[in-house]
View 1 (cartoon, rainbow, N blue to C red):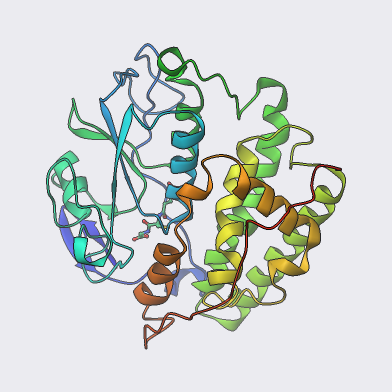
View 2 (view 1 turned 90 degrees about the horizontal axis):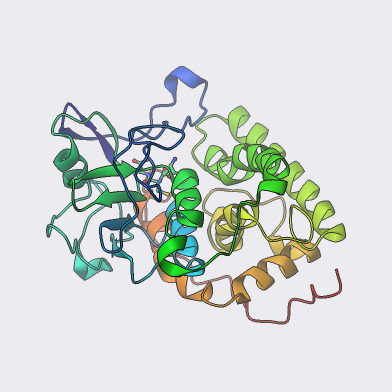
Length: 325
Ligand SMILES: N[C@@H](CCC(=O)N[C@@H](CS)C(=O)NCC(=O)O)C(=O)O
């Protein structure tokens, strides 16, 4: 695990000295948007017109942020239009790698060994963390975006003209509601599990775990009255939450010490999680082996033996019972 400084790879764990033991996530560096006509999006530069075959996704099947983009690619019927390479679940001294022996598909575009080579291909003197997902433009040979929350919004509509798929997971009428949900769920749940697990002081850990479970209680309450987070309609807020929930009992509960409760103790959250998992195509995006291998094997600062636990046994295919909500 490490980062690039002026294009040079440095092997380093997160520095929490200046933040009282708190893990602080770095802002994504590439923030442009693919749009239907190539005009600039809300941030970054223009020139990235939606075109079949032009774009490529680099993902980890273990990573909850990358997982969001795979779900949107699936639900929006983009599999033929946007190609994918998967990194190995083991993120070691050189960061994410394309080691086929440990579960990567290899880099289909450039046969690179490491993900940091994709970043330096886009910018030779890049400084910053080398994260997935990365949305790559094969034509301009550069990174369009490495921010999952924005990639899913591009996928939601930019290619509709080609696919005819008009499923709208960010409906105009629910945007304020969705944004409000996203903001506290991102802070205390999606990133909250990382802030708990990567904390290096007892105080920071306890603070984050308590916040996380207060939010889970709040979500349990919302889901006792609503089928989905924003009401009767499934939105991006649900998929953003889903990728954290699906990893919760298997990884965050043990490895990140988010263990006040297991998700199975929340009846509404568990039923909701199963319902989302059972939506057509979604289970194909979930790879529990990559998920467990990544966290338990890569973070040797937290788990120095690198032993990957066998349990817990989870069955996301059981009836969800949410039809009556
Ligand atoms: N803001 C980014 C965060 C992506 C991210 O942090 N990905 C993790 C994997 S789960 C990563 O690549 N971490 C490597 C690192 O921090 O060095 C997004 O949502 O796309």
